[in-house]
Every structure is written in structure tokens, then in C-alpha cells.
Image (cartoon, rainbow, N blue to C red; front, side):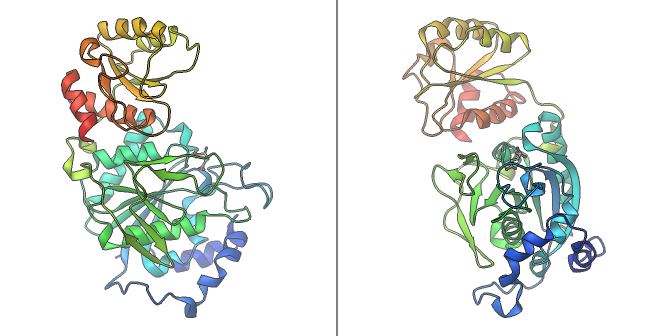
Length: 374
Ligand code: GLU
């Protein structure tokens, strides 16, 4: 296994240099004692080989002081240093770090998403790689996870992980989240469950998870609940994703080199109709309208949306409420206008699905089926 440097040595070399070691270690001290190993820990036949891809975010962040839990610089600590600061991970897996980006996740765009997806796909094809962990900012973690969930062609576990507090903060959550993510990626029962997001002791499916609070560690939620928990070094599933993912979908990351432009226009009282025209003029092939309530559309917005559709742009009615389904032909006559509804998907994730769907078809009926299927 020459590709996988045992992290123990790396940790020893980097511990003193780490920006975040002191704080993180203070928090992990109890579990660092061998006697504290939980009786429930699974006895693995061999350690899994896990590649940890660093992209930035708060899990790679550092603040000026320990009380900076929410104001700090994200994306500054290299992935190898993050790994070195949590030597517990080497007890559950052979890990290897790889830095692909060092960015806040708000800076993800289609090019970066494709680059990440293609690298993950490449690694998953290596027989000596059992799973992937991606460290990521929490702001758009749900979009990346949903994209990978729909486009990777492998059963191997892929876990996207972040943190809400930098490693320098009191109560930093990154170390435990990373440890939990490596546990989940190493757990053979994580195979075939699609791309997962692990934070705050919970395992979520990339399809459903969304960030719901700007600063709390308990920010990630899935409308139908998490798939499982990670507690005391043990990951456990309680339910399965119902919608098709990874090997079951029609998209293959290796075959996608460009994603069509899809705009999200946010609705509010007095929304400017010119925002629809601006999206069309900027080359959007579809507009996800983050409408109010059950996808309701203001009377003065109907004509601009119909005009966009007449120019060939697909219109997807979504909801800005954050949960629930948008019902076809309820608030608006979708059949008559040839519009699409998003089912239960959030506008930002409907954008991902629409971009992928448009790589296969521009038929509105087929596109509607895609939204109901995935
Ligand atoms: N805005 C940054 C990002 O999404 C930091 C937020 C976080 O990671 O929690 O990468």
C-alpha cells in the first residue's frame, strides 16, 4: 500500500507546526486514551484506504482568537495539517490527503464542481482506494454533494464533510466531524448509499441535506431526517435513500465537460421583472424561479416568465420556503404554459438537477419526469 502514508508519522511531524493542533487536541484528549475505546467499535478485518480531498471552507479555517466561532478566515489550513491534527483517524483508516482547492465553498462554480467530480471519479477507480472524504465549506456543501450523488459511477463511499467553527475556536467541531467522516467512509455498510454528508454526529444523503442556520453547529437538516448517526466511533444507518443515485442515474461525471447555464431568480414582494430578462440575456437555458409558498407567481411576473419560455428557456417553479413540494398545475397552469415544477427540491439544488438534465434533453415533459424521479 505504498500510496498510503500512515498518518501517524505525518501527524508527529506536523503537530507542532499545526495552526489548530492545540485547540483540537484539547477537545479530543479523552478519546485519545486507548482505554477509552468504545466497546461497540466495529472490528474491521483491515483498515480502509481513504483519500481525503481538501477544498477549503471553515474546516480549513482559522480565527484570531478562541472566541471567534463565527468570524474567522476560511480556507487557510492545508488538508495535510488538518489530517495531522486528528491522529485518531489513522486508527480507523489509512489516509492520504490531496489538496484540490483552497476556497470558501461560495466560490464553487461549474468548472470547479466538474474538476472535483472528475478527480473523485478517477480515485474511485483505483482498486486500492476504498472511499473518499471531501473537506468542504458548509455554505454550498449540499450542492456539491447532490451533484456527486447524481454523477459518480461507483458504489464506494464518498463523504463530504465540513465544520461550522474553525479549528482555533472553543468548541470547534471540525476534528470530530472529520473523524466521523473517515469512519463513515471506511464502513462497508456505507457502500451503495450515494454521496453522504457527515456533520454534527449525523449522516445525511446528499440529495436531501441542506444548511438551515448561519452559525449553529446544528444547522444541517434533511426533510425526512438523517440516514444515520455516528456516535463513539461507530456509524449506524437507520434508513436508506429512496431516489436513484450514483450508478443508478443517467449521468456520468467522466462524460460531462460543460454544464449548461441555469439561473435561479428569487421571488419577493416587488420582485423586478427585469431579472427574468437579464437571466435570458445572460444565456440561461433554464430559470429556476424560487417562488413564494407553493410556487406562487405574482401577476406581474407571469408574462415575463411566459416570454422567457417562448424564447426556449425552460421555467422551473420552485419554492423559497425551504421545504415541501411544489404541486403541478396548482398555483399556475404548468401544462398550459409548458413550465416544470421542482417536486421537493430546493432552488439551489434544482439548479444542479436542471443543469444535468439539460445535458440529455430539452423536452419539458422529459425534464418534468427527471424532477419527479431524482
Ligand atoms: N463561507 C465558507 C464556506 O462555505 C465558510 C463557511 C463554512 O465552511 O462553514 O466555505
